[in-house]
Length: 215
Image 1 (tube, rainbow, N blue to C red):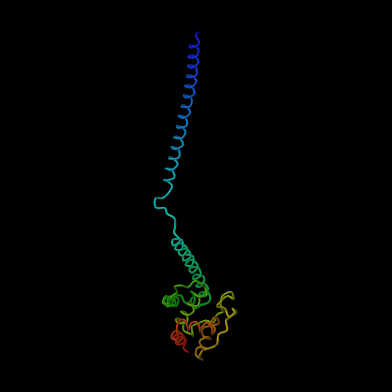
Image 2 (image 1 turned 180 degrees about the vertical axis):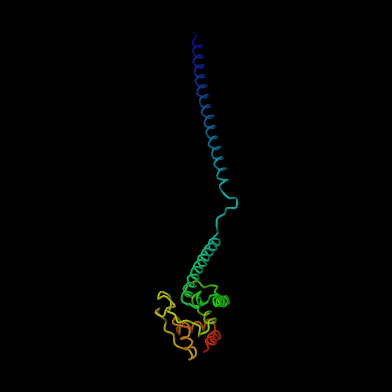
């Protein structure tokens, strides 16, 4: 074999080796492209699944929306508390005033009259139990004549309406008739409470209480 043939044979071997390397590189590239394509397809499938779990109208709540939600929740909580306190106040009121018991009011006439009168009072905004009791007592005075009222014990000492509860010092501005009205209204009433009622509901309302109490 000549020297020239040897050189050609060596070049052919080198070319074959280069072709082998290039073929392997191409195979690796094809496999990489296939792997990346599979990853993309998997991501696309995951995105589609997530789309089905998100509501089309979903949105981020603005601060105004959050405030509105808080106000609504607080309002619902106050309404629930007010309803529970009103029920508790009515139970205590009826337990205290035996005029409305089945024995003393078998036909429920007095109770119906009291509830009818109570319906004319604005109870919107009342939440505390003692506030409901105060309104119940005012309606009671307007319905039950003095001679038909029973002398009863005051409400529980835990109640702010109890005579044992601490009072603010309020300068007396009551007339003699208004002082007499206090004795008719019972132990849950004091000068401070009557002055507050006089201020909030007007002197005409107190005059109406005194008229119904024959004072």
